[in-house]
Image (tube, rainbow, N blue to C red):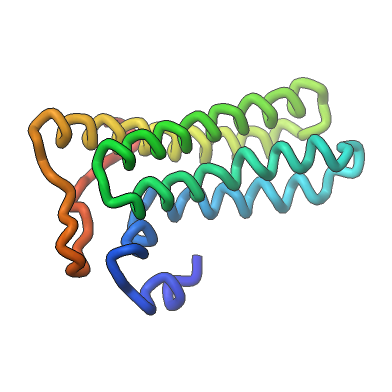
Length: 153
């Protein structure tokens, strides 16, 4: 992750760049993309589906954040979680078909599981904020959500 680029040109619409779940989803995309490019047995349609599902995770986290409304953010984070599940199914299927080796799958599974649990925890905390009637700060000052989440939550 290029922190110099992440930390420049800040504004209220780019606040998602500080979210750990966004950063991890970008890194997971990079991890999957490198492996998928090496798999010569896969046709381009399958490669494209795998790339689209993992690419959708960071995209939906960003879009939900940029909508500036808690309910919309929850909805898009749930879509990101669904894309993550779709990608797991695709990668597991390739592993089961012996197209992906166990060592690579185990590393993927570790990274995926961490991100998956963090997104679940983040969504739970956002739902709690909504129930507590916490309003999204829409005053266009550069502020970040002060949410702590862990893989174990």
